[in-house]
Image (cartoon, rainbow over all chains, first blue to last red; front, top):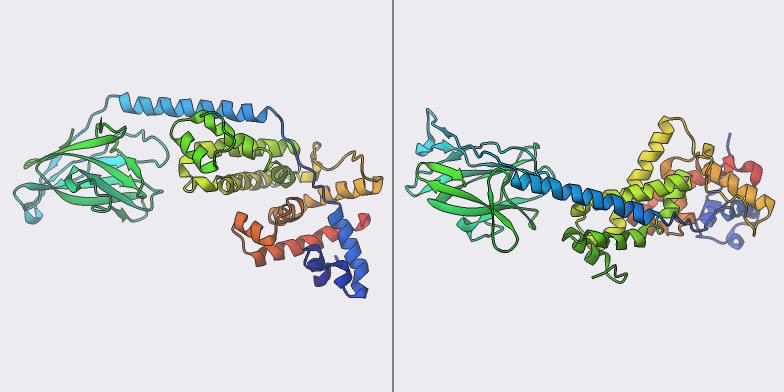
Length: 219
Length: 183
């Protein structure tokens, strides 16, 4: 059976007591314990001089690969499908159509195809319910900002749909064309990958949605 | 800007995220040796430690956008390295390979300033550390090799001071048992 150190000797090893502060009967044990700590090798460890170059070589590869993926995603042709769905029982005369689903893999460029989501026409004559959906499993807060709310980051928060990582909100948008983008965690602007994006003139990309009385479609 | 060594971590992180990939070299140079001893002692091997540091630096670059507080890059990088070391230790344990079986250990082999007895004791301690749990080994390395206080270790690892002391005190007992022929 092993014999552990006395609690006061452990305090000695922790630097909370000196050897002289130990009771005389514990000083031999304390001296032994100090021999153990005295065997600690504190010399610095120096890594290979080539490590910096190796890391940077890999980093450059990863950065280039990331750029290629982003360019491919931006330039690859894609279909944006809009579906009109008439429901047998329509609440307030609502009409469901598709607007777009944004797939966001935080920290990465999304690579999946757009998925239709539902949009409903509001009871008002000049506005249509548009449903915004974002897949952002790592997000703490998601909002949609656009020309319809003066790009207010706080005006249209999305609600988390269970634990699936999907965030959603439905807004009544006036008829017309709107630019929009998602805002993740209050600081990260993300264009809707399910919709073509346009340059906003300030280096960012916005998505476009056209709202008509017959529904909405991404441009 | 070049590889200015006086830029803060936060400035460099933001520059890299803005597309200046080459500026990541500043962070590589700044932290490669700072965490080298921790990694080497945790894994019992200079080569394994170097692999871990390299891997952690690459992973940190890949996830840089997730670094929510760029000015605290050092602590964030440490956690990545720490996870890497723990994963490597688990892999070694699954393979039934204790640290002291490695042939490139970092224990002092030929210290010019030590007696034969001291050198043997250092080697014995290095071997004995390989028999501690990763948690015990970590607190021993950070306190007695890196010279950190308990509250500093708590800040780095997220553990409480009380739990760190408990791990350390168990490590003392275990080391006394393993080192009894050398004390």
